[in-house]
Image 1: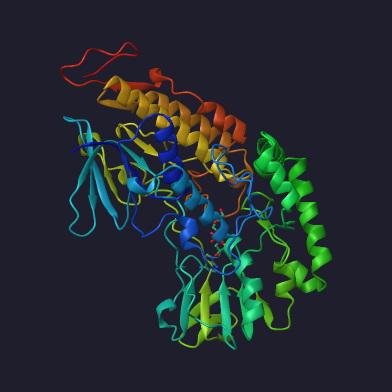
Image 2: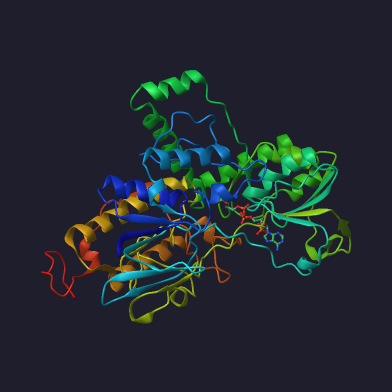
Length: 498
Ligand code: NA7
């Protein structure tokens, strides 16, 4: 039997999509999840210190606000609890199938249906619409360093933490000083005998002021209607103004850098170390790091910052280019994720046997980050050029899921076969996006996970969250080719190909 909607992934995007589908009267959907619990990146990232660097009031859905957040910023366990509570509150458990790893999906033009195939001997499922909610930061990236497999000690990736490994008395190497690395290192310094931090590029660091939310404040949120919305709006507009310094190279960028330099001067005494920790790229070109305990940890007696490039991994440890071998018991890779900037997480075959990964080989693109021409009724969350950069990913996500669930409603209520974005509309949109990206800080010369090796930016949205939300506020059916079933009447909007 064909279902209305197949949602792939039970992280924030999949759960949010499910809630909005239900609220819009669509109950015939199933969420397919490869793991054995919901939560996506917050299920996987359980390393010590794992927390969000966006305030909880903003890193949550406006349609599922939570008066109980314990701090300004939430730790991963509390975010996971929040996701669990959404599942319970909206009776979503009966829609979720665990242990279903999707291996490929393909579109049949005749029936207007997608076939979803799974690993193992699971029977394929057919659906009229598919929502890709598998997340861009789902698969850990191991760095391409010579001899990596030769290491004889213990290896851990930040996104697959080994909670059974006891760091007490151990010599540890940490490779990677991005958002994950700077959260892990202070915890390892407290536990391990010694920690060597291998830094390739220092980031711009701002202090993280994380306050506990008192009972009085929680009571206000619980009892006064609109109080949570007001607090959220405050954080939202605060982050919108930060865009002026993070998205574009403006005087505010210099102000962010000055603040970060002051933070460095106040926290790090040694001039040599300060020099090693000073970035040589514009603030905002890579993600800003929010932490107050990273610099103190680097200066602890049992911690050492290593800035010589890594030559290779040896059986005993990490060898740097000047010939020193740093012998360790364990290597922690905080090296980020395989971000699908060009590929797709599994094979996606659209009309005429077209394969999306082939079309995205030069860099991914989509219309309004959600739809791709030739792949009707397929909706992507966190798709091409939807990256926030300066604001909460969930603010962006909420716009996407509102938009795509409206499209599902159009399709289901009208009994149409397909909605496929027009090629010329998609092309115009992407030409404009790339033109606007050229003047952003992300394209100002540093290498980051936002860019392909050729420097193509298919991840970030070049503007304010408000602009992003505006473009997704309403589905303009004239942007889409509507296909109807052979025996159906022509739709009232737009030209038809049946
Ligand atoms: P990131 O931000 O991709 O950081 C990865 C880190 O690993 C970064 O410091 C990299 O250095 C470093 N890295 C990667 N490959 C190597 C090699 N080969 N040698 C040395 N160092 C290396 O991942 P995170 O997990 O910290 O954060 C991911 C996102 O999650 C983050 O942006 C937030 O959106 C949430 P580099 O800077 O490339 O020189």
